[in-house]
Amino acid sequence: MKLFDPHVHLTSERYDDDLPEVIARLREAGLTGCMVICDPGDREPDCARAAEIVEQNPGFFLAIGVHPHNANGFSPEVEREIRRYAARGDCVCLGEIGLDYYDGFASSSELSNPVAKGDLKSQGDFNLYDFSPREVQRDVFERQLREVRRAEDVVEDRLLGVLLHQRHVLVRRRGDVFERQLDLALELNLPVQLHIRDAHGEAIERLQARHRAGRLPRGVMHCYSGSWESAKTYLSMGLYISLSGVATFRNAPKVWEVAKNLPEDRLLVETDCPYMAPAPMRGKRNEPAFLRYTLERVAELRETDPERLAERIGENLNALFFR
Image 1 (cartoon, one colour):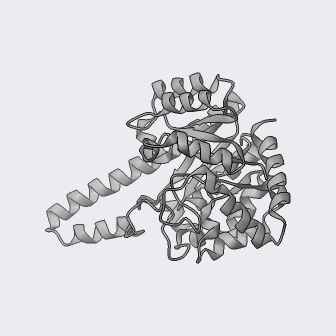
Image 2: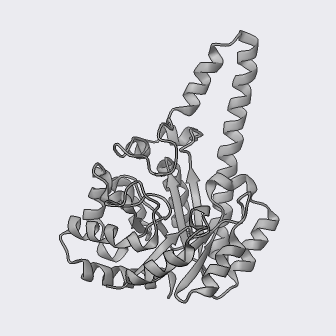
Image 3: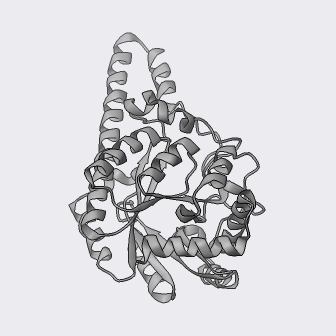
């Protein structure tokens, strides 16, 4: 069974001690290669290291883009870096890019958008990032406001103004950087890997506007954990949906529903390693060799043969990234 992992973070410090062994294990597991994600907007850019890994390993490819959490790091210099790496023959994607309000800085449209309400709720008894704090609260902004209101009136007014200003600036910045990178993808004729977290309502509005205008690049919803209703909207715009180890979790009914109903010509699987290791590897550092667990679980949910599904996913990968 031949597999390809379209989303890995092999530059993570979690691989510093044994990356050659990780790569050897992925080969033993039947993977022909993977797509290494790098972010030139990070405080510690990893693109040179990612490019080195790709150059040294046949079947490996590069994806470059500024993650929404690093939107403040986007600059003309960073855009030049994106263009420089995109000119390489082994760079086949712009990503991961998108919108992420998991830190509580949801936009007003997101909080009021009925399409997104199901996606703002917890998927189950797990946190999407196994290596993130377990007690991250989704009501960060509201809690901050409550704390402010306990202060004296003058202090309250000042702090509230600061919080509202920070929220406005951050939300606008993330949206602007997302739009700019979508434009870049069109200009460079590259597909995109979209990271959308607690932001499906706003993302759908932005992407639908582009779709109507003929300005939406081809792409995939990376590590999708939203609802089937939102997934149908993304599919209607020609996007693919990629499922991660979340599909193997004990309590992930929304992802199971998506896995069961996705058209087979729009389905991908990924690890997003080192995060979200699939069962039975939960709690361990994830790696590309674990991709088969997700594939097998998705095949089980769809009541189909894993070998046949792997072949179909290979065709989808070629259509999206390597045409």
